[in-house]
Every structure is written in C-alpha cells, then in structure tokens.
Length: 408
Image (cartoon, rainbow, N blue to C red):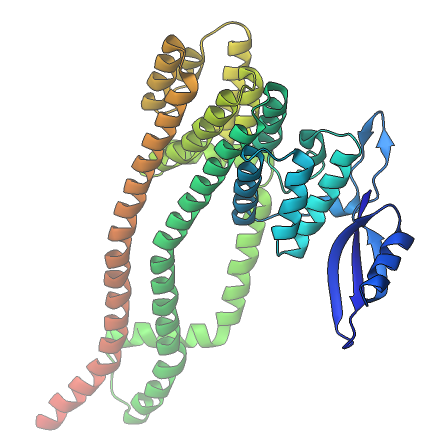
C-alpha cells in the first residue's frame, strides 16, 4: 500500500487535507466518498521507483522536519517499540498521533516503504533533510543488533538535549539582541527626527554652536541625506560577505581566524567538540563501527578546520593509531576531550567517556555563554547610554550658552 495526500470537501463544504494509504488512487477516492467526503485531489506522497533494488528520491522527500518535532517523534517511536509493537505498527500509531500534515506525509511514505520490504534505515535515508546521518546509521545498527528500541531512546535523549541546548543559547542571546535593537532605534530617532527640529531653532538664533553640537548636527544631516544609501551598502556588504564565506577557501580562512582569536577560540572548540563527542557516543553505543561513527560525527561540526582535523584523525585511526592520539596531534580539540577519549579506549567504555566529555564540554560552554551575556548587557547599556547622553548634551549645550549670555 502507498501513501496518498488528499484534499476533500466535507458535508459543510469545508476543505479538508490529510494523508491516508491505499493500493491506488481510485481506492482512496472511494474510501473518502464512503466517509461522506467529496475528493478534490488525491496524489501519491512520493513518486517512488526502484533502481538497483533501492527506492529513488522523489520530490516530496526533500521535506524537512523541525528538530523539536523530530525529538518528539523519536521518543514516541522508542516508547512504542519498547512496548513490543512491530515497526509497521509503531509507524501506524505515530501517524495517527501526529498532528502536523508534514510529519504525517513523511511517516506515511516511510511506512509504505517498510511494508514493501525496505528496512526502516533505508526508508528514512530518502529524507536526508529530515533525518540526519546519525539517525540513519544508528537505526541501521539497531536493526542489525536487534536493539532498535534502545537505540531510538538514545537518539531521543540526544535530540532533546540538543534542542534544549539551542533553546538555552537562544534565550541567553535574546535579551542583548533586543536591547541593541531598542537602543539603536532610539539613537536613529534622535538623530533623524529630534536633531533636525532643534537645528532649525539654533540657526534662527545665529549663535556660534559648540563643537559637540556641530558634530551631532553633521551626523544628523548625513543620516537624513544618505541614510538609505548607507543602509543599502551595509546590507549589500553583509550579503556579499555571506556569499564569499560560503566558498570553501574563504570559509576555511574565517574558521581558522576563529580558532586563533582569544575569547572566540574556546567557544568554537566547545560547541563543535560537544556535538562531535555526543554524536560519537550515541553511534558507538548503538554498535556502529568506529570509523563510520567518526565520519558521521564530522557531519555535525560547523567549523571547517575542526572538521578537517577530524577527517585526518579518521585516516590515522584507519591505519591503527588510537583515537585519543589522533585527536591530540592537531591541537585543536580540547585536552579534556582527548584525555577522556584515551581513558575510554583503555577501559573499553568509550561511549560512556564520550558522553561524559560531551556533558562537561556543554557545561563549560553554558558557563561561558552565561558570563558573556551577563557582561554584554551592562556593556551595551553603558555604550548606548553614553551615545544617547552625548546627543542630549549636544542639544542642550547651546541652550546653556544662551542662558549664560542672557545673564551677562
């Protein structure tokens, strides 16, 4: 049976969208009519064909599931499989529980492929935008070892921890960003709206203005006349730099700069090392071979230099070098991670030590982010407050001078 998306009208004339399964479109239309619905459109979720024993990727398989939805979906699958349900029964239950149309479409297509005889790992491999490489490789290892439910539980923990980390960082950064935007809006309003009105009054008096006032007036006139041009140049520059640093060479240079800049180096190391060690821990604990686990772990790293270092380490491990020594040679990975990996290799508990290394690195990163944000807020208030105070003083100084002249 294949998965079909449909649009139909109910008895009140309301359009209903959904996903169902059937042997062909005519059967689906007949079932909809039996339910009192008038089918408007029925189409297959994906146009699957088979080449060399593998299903090819259809248009709908470029769909992306959000990380939060994926963690919930994974937890549901793990719970259902651990309760003794088969994979097909689990997928059917997940489809019924899911509320999002996108998730229903993806899972219905995966269930159709599973009922046709494909493994779960092969089915989800057709959705690379929805399921990361760690997901596919871990499920494949779980299927081979017969521990799919336990593997999905580990994946659910991993996805939930990753989402929680992203939420913490986003919440920590939200306040400084909001503060910056508000202060910037106040500065622009003062320079573009308030200062020009005050300038008209000062010009009528004909007095010699203080230097600070002249500077603010010049900045105001420039912003009023050329503000849009400046904004356009800044936007073009930002877009141009983004396009430039998407190229391998410039991106590698920029990432090298990150690793050589004090204050940023530790943050970049901690972020990518935590991702790599957490992913490696999940995959090794799921029974995935170490080289395949390391290759998949490289995919979750953002920094091109660290990713290249890990690729070199993979080559050395393939030649018989220990993982800890291979990671240590480039000097870019945190010493704590290197020592714990070496300890895990010696004790035969590599996945456990990798998990502890990831936790320690994430805790250090959270501490650094919290300290940075706690300093950034007051610094921004101080800087923006100084700028606002300077503009206000520039406006008031001529008034003070006029008052002194009247007293004389």
